[in-house]
Length: 304
Image 1 (tube, rainbow, N blue to C red):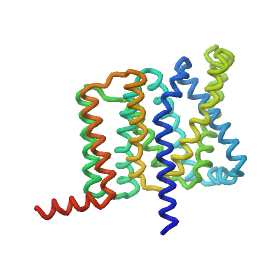
Image 2 (tube, rainbow, N blue to C red; image 1 turned 120 degrees about the vertical axis):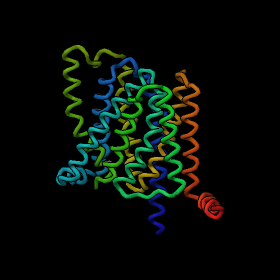
Image 3 (cartoon, rainbow, N blue to C red; image 1 turned 45 degrees about the horizontal axis):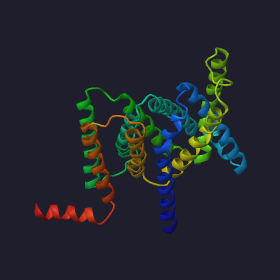
Image 4 (cartoon, one colour; image 1 turned 135 degrees about the horizontal axis):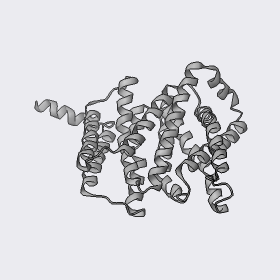
């Protein structure tokens, strides 16, 4: 019992670290906004694999990577997670460097709802009374934003769906977090390398065309990518997906603050109402794990 509690605590803190890092990541991507999104993504994949290759070699974890190759079901799951991850990365980088940080933050506010629903539908996770109320409030907040704006928020929905599905498939995959992420980068890296070569042949690449400092920042995309993902994959294996879903509010909160105050993006009354409903939902969900909310529910039943 004590070991299980310790594992959950470690998993929770790992998830918190991941979401905090992701929340502050727009600051990093903005330093590379002069580079086309597809080039940033390709270099991000390649340098992430290089960094992970070093970690796996140093920790002698190659047997775990080979185990993924040998297990057909696990290998198939990681093919899907690689696709979801690549699409999520491309959409996010494009959104940040195109002045849509607030839209990106909305995507990651929607994402917890997606994670909760996926956990309930596919992993048979249960929601208590107050958790259902919190999910309903999130849904109302998202619908209010969509209806008032008058268009489908495709950036937000793409980010929410791709990362929600990534979390679901990673939870179902039987693999160590480091080995799994390394395998994902092994799948994506050949495509990225070919793309970089083709772009440079056709004069569309960045090698030899950007300042040294900018290129050093490009090299660092491997570190800023791999470390939060390792924390996330460590956490998602040790805590319930519904808990992961609501911890994700940390990341879009930081993104929202950066979008409004650092990057001066518009934040209307519609944003305020929608985000306010979502924050109320977060508070209710957080309290649903304490003794306060069950007591309140009992009082409501007694009045009935």
